[in-house]
Image (tube, rainbow, N blue to C red; front, side, top):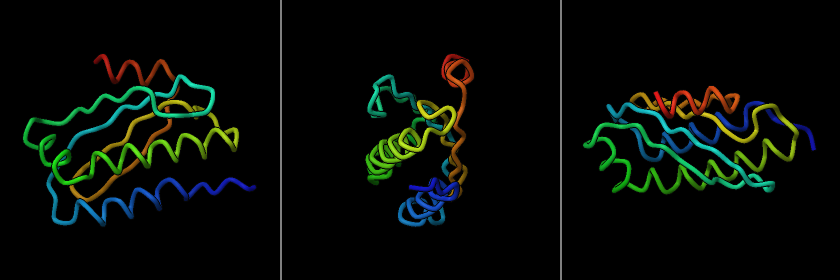
Length: 111
């Protein structure tokens, strides 16, 4: 199987189209996998209280967690760098993902 570098963003764009049209939500999600199978183990959501309630109640949070599991597994299966942690940025209806070294992801989580 050949790694498709556009897979992550295409799936995030689909999710944004489903939940974030006309949204003004801003924040980020830091995610980590410690398991060998690439499953999501730890998540830190950094949103203000109103935005957090909005993403939780709309179903966006639930579906983002499912998508992160898929992306972690896909990246790991294809031996991509930094396949176990990263950050999802949300700005309105725009979502992007950064795959980060563990130290960088932990610094964002703790900072």
